[in-house]
Length: 153
Ligand code: FES
Image (cartoon, helix red, strand yellow):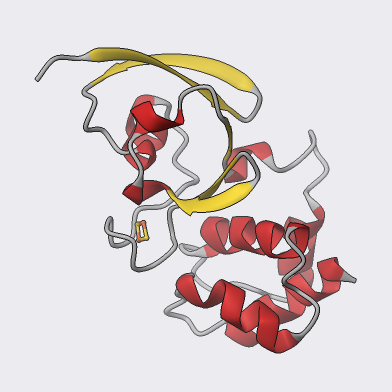
């Protein structure tokens, strides 16, 4: 299998890598671009730790090939803050203690951002349903729901 040149637009910057076409978006981010904020939990669509936004929609980056995402706007946890100022969802997670070990947190936060943006955060139940693909072994769910609900206003 040959190596391809591909260009990924991540957090507003075009980045070119040489990788086999079978490389997942998750591995491209972590291993080729050193963006290790995106976490690998299960590597097959079960845990949500690898959640990123592509064109504003959340996806499990372990389930999509990097090569399929060329030319699209990809947002990872590293791209959310504006300089020193954390994104409102990051601030809300801190305020509500929406984490313990933190491993699932980048995925939770990006899923939460999409939840609010797509209008699925009007009730606690709606948030729980939307966030159900993002597992948290520490059981921080009530605080995560509170954080997302606060950002939704
Ligand atoms: Fe992608 Fe678990 S690492 S869903």
